[in-house]
Image 1: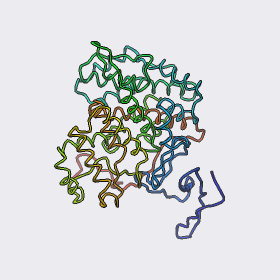
Image 2: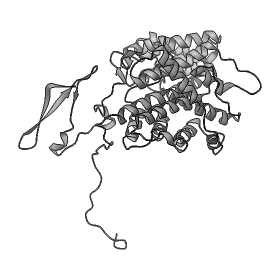
Image 3: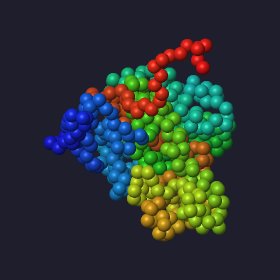
Image 4: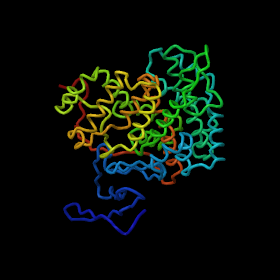
Length: 430
């Protein structure tokens, strides 16, 4: 919201002035509205958009200095403890937690949409068996628009809602089948009567030979991972979805763009990097030398610290509890890899070097350990991240499309290339 405060800029040889209004959000720092800055004949320069607010949103807020994360105003700790993933999806999409009746209807709707068109299975067969599951997901999610023509009018609120439901419902199926195709396993269909997380585990691990029994502790852990990764404000992939959507592209194409962006190792591959780091360390005996290498800046510590959170990642404490529950359930506390991880955690939480630099274990450290303990291969970590983040992406896309002030994204640039005004024809060039 605007107020009477303003920022005044003096510029040029004539000392011209221009005023910019100051806007206040519900939480967080104030924002200077620079939309009229172009009147000066100049543009701002902000690589990575670290000091630029590109949109107004009511969905998610992060206070990195304090270490807080809110979905629609609710602290993430409360949602992780009291809500499941589909209830969180409803909240992100609609702005309010559902009543019991609304929750039942929403769950039924998602269940109704969880099957894939049978022709989509032929898409999987066009890939090599060793294709990365994220490569498969980018293609198949984008291809959904070729099958569901009845919900592509982005200016129709009902179409937007149907597309959101379809994406939330179908992406676990796509992720699971990408895994099964990679492993040479027959595709597994979703099963009525199972929860969202249970169904994903069923589609991942079931075999035609015997009934797959879902462990409720592991299913709850996976559901909590989904909740904690459902949204994270204007990160790279969410901004990618918004930028793609600003052109009027259909929602399936926009979410495919988000999946592609998430695939980058600087974004969605952090928990995968944790497991690779553990493999490189090898054993508990090597931990002291490795941590000294971190201090000497010869080794990189993955899964500790966070670009946004200058304090403890609020999701990490929840995942630590979940990690302990999973390791206890599976009796893995004495497994060499997990003992190694706990040794790293102990040093990071007790050594003054890491405490002073706020290099606390983050959510990726614990979620990587949990996913590995459940039996999910490292190549599936980022697809599961994409599965969880889909609801955040589609919520931001829907919010943007419904905004009457939406404009197509068109960042400016600072050109530093050559200027050649005299063209020289071929044959005359020396």
